[in-house]
Length: 66
Image (cartoon, rainbow, N blue to C red; front, side, top):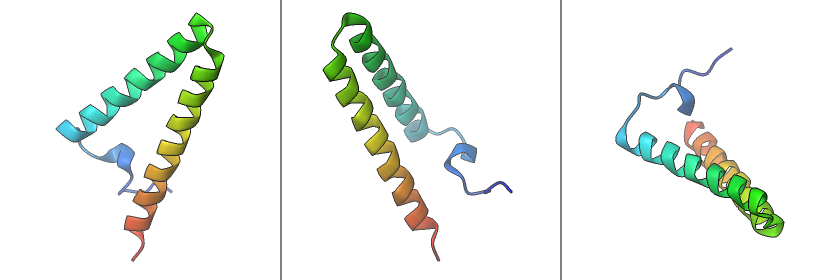
């Protein structure tokens, strides 16, 4: 069953567009770090993105609780 309040179903707004652009730039930076051989920096960037996404999801779930 889908959740109608999911962040993936929100209308496109300026803040959502900015979040998407930040995520895109982060993915490009991590990919270029891997390609340039900066493995430690790429892993640190990947860990940062995963932690930020987990915290964002946790905050969203906390707001959904009655």
